[in-house]
Image 1 (cartoon, rainbow, N blue to C red):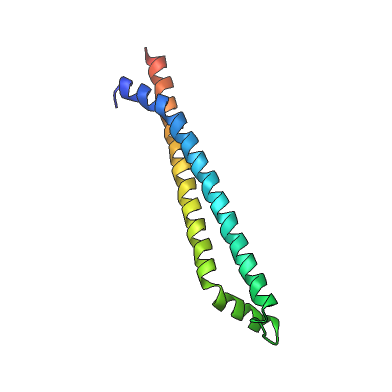
Image 2: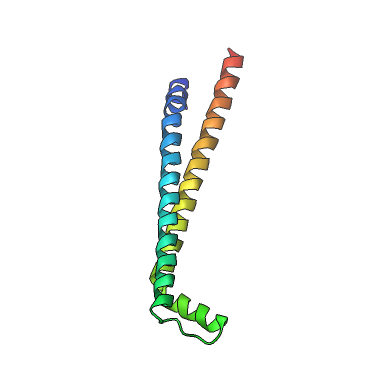
Length: 109
């Protein structure tokens, strides 16, 4: 990487990091919404009398079986959030590394 490329990278990384932070916020909001949908679905199943197990284990099993799509959406949202965090961390690490190299080059001149 040339000095000009390093300078350009250092100049662009703050915006990339900002966008990565905004993506994390979006995925966190999406995860919250999917959890709310699951909670509402569970409440609906209880109030409609669909969940009628005689003990807690049976009721929990019934809930899990009847909320598979909602639980899958939560798993997808969690995965997307984790990937966004990985991207954010990678950008931050790149920025720190580029800044360290720039400081070394500054000291070498």
